[in-house]
Image 1 (cartoon, rainbow, N blue to C red):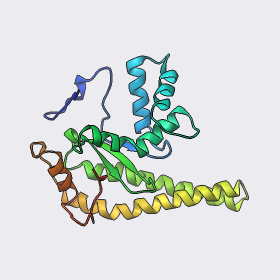
Image 2 (image 1 turned 180 degrees about the horizontal axis):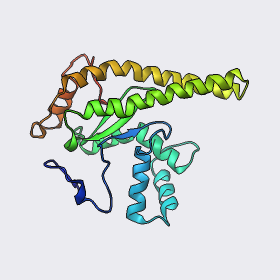
Image 3 (image 1 turned 135 degrees about the vertical axis):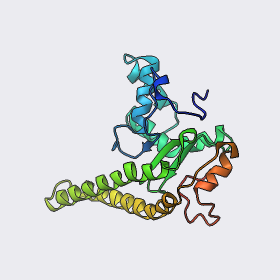
Length: 218
């Protein structure tokens, strides 16, 4: 059931489960943001089923998501949102998703979900500045920390592996930044009456060669 499908947004109508205030749910490989998708999902489970059964319910969800390998329930849920959620969402909505996903690429440098019915001309710019640029600063700080660990001879192999990964993720977000900057400048408005497919392409600047594609492929 869709609780909100356009019109004037009034957050005061929501009492038990409070929607994200800026309509952006970041998805990252590590919990860099306090309001990321896993935190919000955890809050939802807690509100619906109670705090006493929270851990049992998270384990149950994780066990049924089909994510293989080791890891905690939260880590497996995070992997699901990173790798599988949007594909499943597009299947359910027959390639007309109501959640749109920003996606920097295969390195999982940055992903984020936004609800289409709350989309406006500022959405792309807000996601870019408030989340992706903040994440880039966190990556850069982590790179400095890891370089210092390596120089000090601390966990060299582990630190080098992580340094390579973080460096690649930062580079991916920097390459993506040029694309998203063009879309921000366009300040494209969408019209929900035109349908998801038309609006999705419109936000991508209608580029057939995908030069400015900032949203995940549907």
